[in-house]
Amino acid sequence: MKNIVLIIDDDNRNIFALRLALKARGYTSISATSVPEGLSLIYENPHIRVVLMDMMMPDVDGYAAIKMLRADERFIDMPVVAVTAQAMSGDREKCLAAGANGYVSKPVDIDKLIAVIEKVG
Image (tube, rainbow, N blue to C red):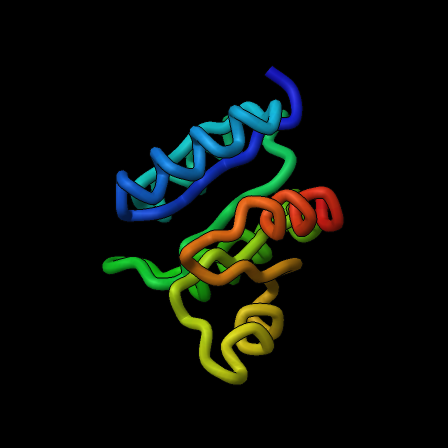
């Protein structure tokens, strides 16, 4: 499996919808429902091309997850797209300042998501 999209989101409904939409567009995806699980997948799988990171998760949020990922020099340049229900003024900038390469608000517009994946990945 090459060029995999990793979805990290604590809501299985979001994962299901994103995986279905990505598959319809020809993408292979894998998923994790927690940051530790997602980071393990990144460490184990060299074919992950981009990470879709839910920014609002219970135990470890996306902001902390991006910091953890960036702390490992192997993954400093790993493309991360913040996928969040936070769509208030300044939220995009906050996500990008935290180290995300792109930002998409929920509910996800798949055309916009694909455009961001193509741009950052």
